[in-house]
Image (cartoon, helix red, strand yellow):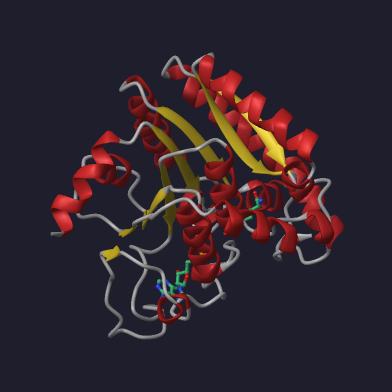
Length: 283
Ligand SMILES: Nc1ncnc2c1ncn2[C@@H]1O[C@H](COP(=O)(O)OP(=O)(O)O)[C@@H](O)[C@H]1O
Ligand SMILES: N[C@@H](CCC(=O)OP(=O)(O)O)C(=O)O
């Protein structure tokens, strides 16, 4: 049953892939894991070569900037985070540009805030930019514009941002690459008996309570709770979603080949009302 359901993943055409900070950096030092990044870029380039539209939502600006600026601690003050993001985002894009150009791919940067989505004109402009980039064969690399977004304009976590991007551009798959294999019956970092859930057909309140909002890594934000919020948004947008482990980026093709990898959340019918209501409440 599980493997036959996953056949649908082979036909996905427009895919948003979200990568968490913990999947991009070495846990011991916080520096970028370049070997892993090379695998990531190769995997994404190959998906693109298969004729798929790929949109990357990459975290990591604050983690990379913090390391580059020599900050020993995780920044807590807004202005400190903003400065780290300014340094880190530029570095991150420099590496992405370099690696993607080695595979003859065109990488592009899109930075968004809540305001980009809430304001009708900005949302329309953002959508046009995405569409034009995809038409040009580029790979958009998205992040929150952390440098200018303060609390009231923030998505706060890229799980939510990636689901909103997926809804905006009508993606048919959202793939969240995390530091964990998928959704478990409980947090496996505190409960060794927790079991991986392979397929979620309906995201009910019981499942929503399984995801705790605390992140166990030194760089992650949001924990499993924000991934489940993303799953609700994706489902309302008619987008299937998979959470898989970003420890091994070859999981990207495993998911697209329909292998039993991570947790698959099946979407049902579109629910524009839920999406609009969610966006309004974000204000
Ligand atoms: N039910 C659950 N299933 C899986 N992970 C969970 C669950 N509840 C809490 N978590 C925690 O969520 C973490 C993943 O979230 P986060 O650290 O924000 O990841 P990332 O940086 O990859 O986005 C896991 O490492 C795990 O400790
Ligand atoms: N926008 C922030 C990341 C926010 C975020 O959600 O981080 P993560 O939990 O690592 O995906 C940054 O680039 O540092």
